[in-house]
Structure formats: structure tokens, C-alpha cells
Length: 160
Length: 108
Image 1 (cartoon, chains in turn yellow, green):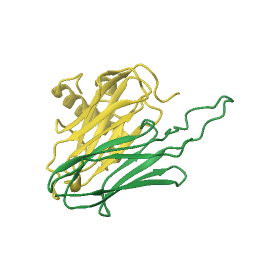
Image 2 (cartoon, each protein chain N blue to C red):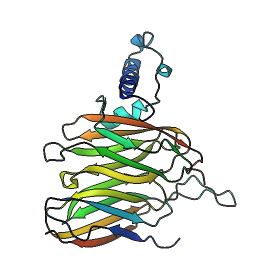
Image 3 (cartoon, rainbow over the protein chains, first blue to last red):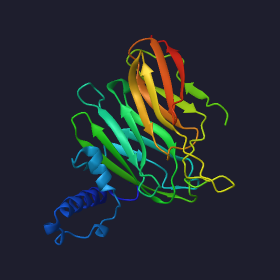
């Protein structure tokens, strides 16, 4: 996200993911750094459910564009763009959006096809509190990209 | 609640091979199920949970919407202009209601 360098983001997500995986083996858990040592709160259990256990890669090809600060939590603009040729053999299948600080984790899933021409969508979402938002893109080769951005809202968009 | 009203905006003309922008919106409260009325009763969830765009009967773009999509959900997305034909748009509401509209697309 805009609040972090790409290097930081890649490190934090990869490390957090690693921590999660290691955490699955209790014997190794004692040697893993605590999850709180990472800068992010990536909902790795849900992400790995969506990927079927495959590890997503933090990538600049996936852009999750949202305002850093937005007063109205009811209608926060969001644009997702994935760099892709969108051909039959190389395209984006879908992008999931997750908001771990909301009452419900899942925000939306966008399904693209080669007939989309571009893997790009804009909408508006509700945010209950300041939080990291996550976008998870599934590509046609079965790989996954992960991006995050921090959004600070001033009002609880899930309450009223 | 007034009946949901779909709105679509398309370019007036597109050329073959061009990727064009589609703006879609439906007037809808997107009731999350998290609110209470004045008497403390929970207002049941009623949202648009799915949006589908078909181009000559083929699904080219769709969305699963959850509670966090804002009221009057709008989607801006793209379509590759391959041939003239019909664009159909469907909004699926909790409880089974479906709202739809269509537009003729001329590709030159």
C-alpha cells in the first residue's frame, strides 16, 4: 500500500504467511517469530482457503487503489487493477477483497474473463474502522497475487 | 423502499477490438442486517448479492457482493468489443428477486 515501501510489504506478507504455515506444525511453532512481529494483519486463514492452500505473492501487478484517509465510512471508493494481457491463455480469473476490521471479512469477489479486455473494476465499500484492506487475485495459471492498502475512515460505515 | 432502478452508461459507439467502460448502478439500500429499527428490532439483511453482465448471452463479468458493498451499488468495469449485439445486466437480491436491464451495442 501507499503507506509502505514495496520491499516492506513483500517482506511482511511473506513472513506472516510463513508464520501461519509454521504455526500449523506445533513442534516448530516455538521457533517462529510471533505473528504480532509483522506489520500487517493479513487474514491468512481465509486467504489460504481462497487459494486452496497456495501461497499468494505480493505483487505490484495488482493495484488496490483507495484513499489513505476518507471521512465517510459508508462509501469509500475502491479501484482494483491487475496488469494482465487478458488473453485466453493469460488472464485474471477473479479478485477477492477482504476487510478484516469489518463485521464481515468478505467484501466482494470480482470475476473477469478474456472478454473483459482489462482486469479493472471500481466500486464503493463500507468500512467500520481504520484498517488494512486486502485484494487477492487469481490468475489463469493458478497463481495468486496479494496486495494491501491502509484506509483510515472517520465514521463507522457498517453501523448506521 | 422504492423499487430498485438499474442504470447503465455506455459509450455511444465502440470500434471492434476496443476495450470500453461500462458504468452500472442500481438504487438499493443494501440493508446489512446489522441495523436495528426504533424499537430495537434487527432489520433483516437484504442486499444485492450478485451482479452479472452478459454479452450476447455469454457472461463476461460478474461480482459476488457482500454486506460491505455500499448502498446503491455501482460497478465500473470493462468489456472488449468483439461484435454488435446485446448487453444484459442482472442484479440478484436476497430472497430471490432479480432486476435486469439490457442495451444494444453497435460495434463498427
